Amino acid sequence: MDHRDEQEFAEYFAAKRDSVRRTAYMLCGDWHRADDLAQTAFVALHRRWRKIRDRAATDAYLRKTLVRAAIDESRRPWRRERQAEELPEPPDVDGALADRVATREDLLAGLRKVPSRQRAVLVLRYFEGLDVGGVARVLGCSEGNVKSQTARGLANLREALGEEVDTRGRG
Image (cartoon, rainbow, N blue to C red; front, side, top):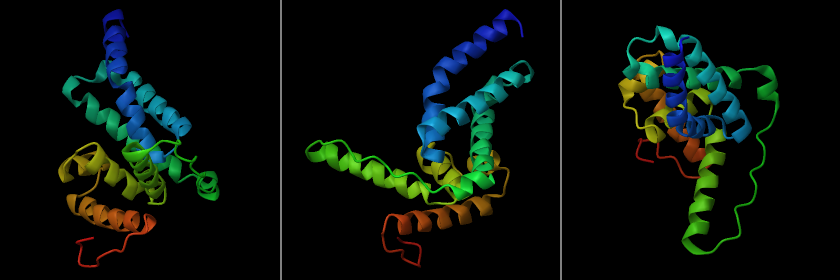
């Protein structure tokens, strides 16, 4: 890679690292694993940086690499054997902040209980803001599959959060 390419990549990395890391955390629920997943995605992007002609597609390539790395990692036998780690207690704070922290921790704990592919769909749809077609492109599947994975993922998340699931789809 020439100096200009390295500079462009460095600027892109600086602009995107925090958001990619947050997305990785939503996918796996652990900051150390999130760092590893983000690093894996950025290393893959760096390898292909020179070959990317359409810089507008860079975000999509990075997102796809990140999500696939998270799903692949969750399929490893040693990962399945390990139980989800207990979350630390929310900080001792008062009022609305305490409620927001507890709600966020509950949501993250619930997401950890959702199967990895369904979790990826939920993160891409509701935290990354992609539409059904965008999620289908990232995951390399049909839009119908995204819709069914979304429905199943939401049902599993509701169950993990202890909410009653309305079988008519109205939660």
